[in-house]
Amino acid sequence: MSDATLSNLDQMAKDFLVVSDTYAGNAPTDIFPILEEKRNHCPVMQGDLLDTFNVPSQADYANSGRPIMTVFRYKDVQNILKDAENWKSYINADGFGAAVDNLLLTAMDGEQHFKYRKMLQPPFLLPVIRQINETMIRPIIKAEFIDKLRPKGKADLVRELSLPFPVRVVYAIFGFPKDDEAVMKFASWALRILGGPQKDPEVFAKTMPAAMEAGMQLHAHVMPIVSARRASAEKRDDLIGYMLDVEMDGNKFSDEDIATFVRMLLLAAAETTSRSFANMLVLLFQYPEELEKVKANRKLISKAITETMRLDPVAGNLARIAAKDMEVAGQIIPKGTAVTTSISSANRDPDIYERPNELWLERPMRPVLSFGFGPHICMGQHIARVEMEAALDLLLDLPDLRLDPDYPEPVIRGVQMRGPDAVHAVWNV
Image (cartoon, rainbow, N blue to C red; front, side, top):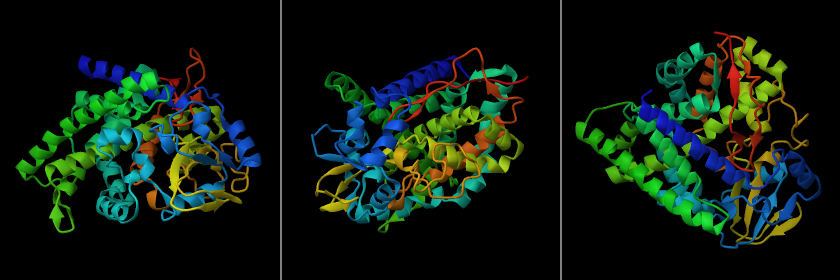
């Protein structure tokens, strides 16, 4: 890496911590006893759980004062997420959506969402991602990250692995030229967009303009790459190549259309994967017997991803808004009321999961809600899972991988965008 890249990685790490602080608010590190109490005694709560902890919420990023309720039980959360007709997603355009011209798949409803998702879905299907795993994803993670870490014998696995590798992989999948400096800049811009919404008006006055500026910088970075690709007429099997050729309603996308869509997709492509991978490492270190099982049998990696994302999901809350008066758990939620659905609570509902507060790799299969559910389930989930599988498999090849005793044990924190600030580990060289 060049000195410039190291500097950009430092900036990325700094922006990452700003996002962590923003979505941690004043909540305790272990929020799960609070969620359990709510789930048992107040499954539908008046008000916004996130507002309780002074955390910006999808349910009202714009701080408009709209009525909000919070839902905690698995079946209620699942029913809301799968019912896109009665529970709308357009409120997700509030807040940082403005930084990407409110063009977010997660904020689209009805025919618009169906049309765009159907058009964009093919490059994200699992067979496609499995195919490029061996030719692109795994080689990048091995050569550019694991092989460089191996002789060091120690590292902060957040800063030196989980933060940069998903950005680098997605950058390649989209078809951008290899450029370490640009990759890190892109990641910092995306993080600044995510850090735009704030509860404190004085802080918001600084972070939201910075988010808007980051959105413009990201667009300015993508636009000439798209234009150059079109001018070259080179056929390449990547996301930009796909969008240059695909048609919607008989029309091809302009360079401006593609740049805007790519920016929207980039925003969600790396941050959640970074934190999910880091959370998985923390939880496996906390359950050494389970970690040893995964080391011995790499076929358990997929289950480790599912189970750690169930136990401690990054996106702990998703928002919807009632299109009409709706009844949930015996309570009426009036039309126009936003709901915060607590994924973190639902994923530990004992009515669904035996031993819900434990990491259990042999757990009987049940749908987890960490990627969402229903029509808006995360389109990039297969990319996230495949690159996390590859990264963990390669990382576990480091001999006697263990936590570094010279540092405090890592802690997952936050109400939303949960993750550790650092994961210091050592291994034998």
